[in-house]
Structures are given as structure tokens and as C-alpha cells.
Image (cartoon, rainbow, N blue to C red; front, top):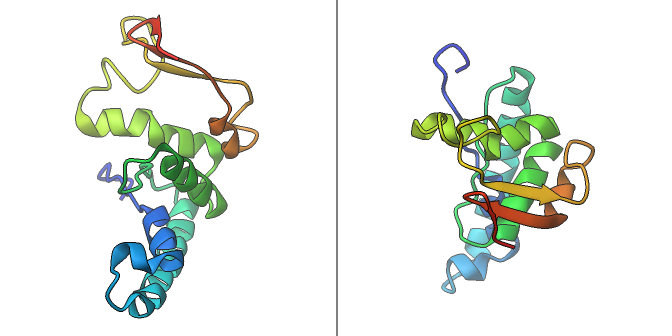
Length: 144
């Protein structure tokens, strides 16, 4: 995977979420789906932990629209072998590279768009610190 530049987007969060709340996935026979998603979560964690040993690049994805789901995905990736720095790259640099827009987005450099999240605590020390948002800068202006 590394030789070909392949990126993996495991989306562990969605399997965990549906294993805990199968009725959200299907209100018809939720008891049937909970164990299936629990097994998918277990397998996904195993895959992530094994591929992390080989430093396979992974994207932070979460199959949803709620920001805390992204935070949850970041924590799950960290718990399954990715370093905090690799998780951060999976949320910033790697998606920009994959989309072919790394010349404008994905990292901080002269000439790139000034879209930043300023945190109160260091996410490299603990990936959960991505939730300590102090400020959001979008196109060079404070947005939040």
C-alpha cells in the first residue's frame, strides 16, 4: 500500500456507533444488527492496528456529519496504533493530497489557504485535545 501511495479510510467510528445503537441503523430487528456491527468494528480495529505497524497512511473519515464523530474516529485510530501525528495528517495533509489540492490545503505554508483550527491543548500529546478548540480561522479571518 505504501509503495503505491494507497490511503486507507477505515471509518471505525460508524461500526462502533451502530454496534452500540443498532436501532439507528434499522428499527426493524436491531438486535440482529448490533452483533454484526460489533464484529465489523473488531475486524476494523485489527486491520488498522496491523496496517499501522507498516505505517500505512490512513484518512480520518467517519461516514457522518456530526463533528464529534470525527473526534471519535481520531481517538479510535489512535487507540489502534496510529501515532497522534499520523492521525492529524490523516485529517489534514493526506486528504488534500488525495484530492489533488495539497498545493493550497492540508498544511501550513506560504501561499496556501489560511484555514486553521487553533487549539488550547497539544493534540500530539493526546489526540483528544483536538476538541480543545480555541479559534477557527477560515480564509485568513477568524470564523469562531
